[in-house]
Amino acid sequence: MIFWKCYFLRQLKLAYLEGGNCLSGAIQTLLCGILFPLALSASPELLTRLSSGIIWSCALLGCLVLIDGIFAEDLKDGSLDYLASRKTSLSLAAFFKIIAIWSVRGIPILLACLLLAVFFNYPIEKFPALTFNLAIGTLLFCLLGGMSSSFIPYGEKGNSLLALLLLPLCIPVLIFGSFSSNLVGSTPALIQISFEMLLALLFLALPLCPLLCGIALREQISQY
Image (tube, helix red, strand yellow):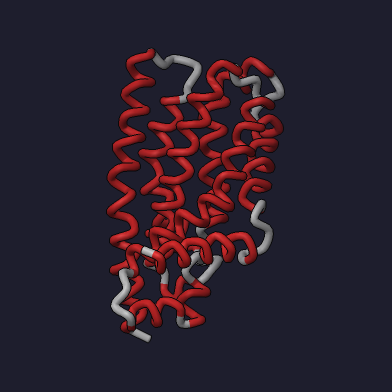
């Protein structure tokens, strides 16, 4: 237990120090959100109606920056080889790394999404629900992204295969997340069902994604 506590704290530190600016995902989220009014319309009414879908799409694109090549350094510097030689669970190592990255770099994306919600005149009374839904959604994006990244050879950054693997997996999260925060055409029952489906996806992804990460990473190590 002490080992995993130290490992998690180390991953938090690395998530802050490595990978360039830890706000890069949040900056991309804001930039994407600002482009939508230019491409669609400056009409406040239209932007408010579309705000849910825009915010969730920007959150996904921001998270795509976070998880690009998250295992690349671990594969190169021998960290994962050391863990594997000690018969340590690579699935747990992947889980703590993903949670650390979400904690340090994913929460700024969440805050950027809330800033976009203010920009799009999203109702202030719905902010608590939106915040909770986005917290679940960004964590899901990171879990699915971490799993996808572990399947890329050498975990290299900038590989277009990551987007091809990740985006189809994120479609259900995007749909249910957008419906759970939608302002137009959503009944309370539909919002409740969408939120429950979002939670169900999280409970499914929490054990499965790290497990598949561990299997894929161990396979990559064995091929070196």
